[in-house]
Length: 119
Image 1 (cartoon, rainbow, N blue to C red):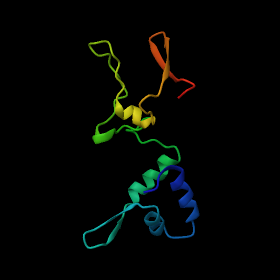
Image 2 (cartoon, rainbow, N blue to C red):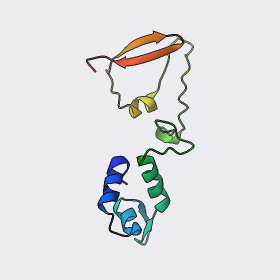
Image 3 (tube, helix red, strand yellow):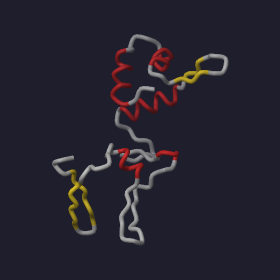
Image 4 (cartoon, rainbow, N blue to C red):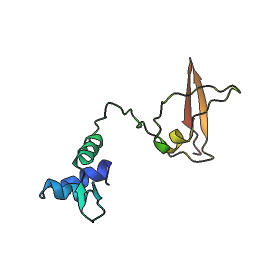
């Protein structure tokens, strides 16, 4: 299924064909056991809206679902040993890799992580 700018571009490219053909060409379908294709218009229209910048009521800036289908809270707690754990779901969304370095900037009741020049 196409998403984002790829979906917008493909939709514009296919402007002269029927809506059903467009949904199919963008990959918004499932195939039944008998091989019949079922078009998923709702998912297609939602993807178009998101690609155009609209956010659903249950979605914030980075999305809400992490791996395993758990909703992300976007809240971190200091652990008993004093560590502040961000978590894999968040680092994956930012495409961070092991070894990436950040400069820690402390402000009044806030922490900012800024990538170092080497990252």
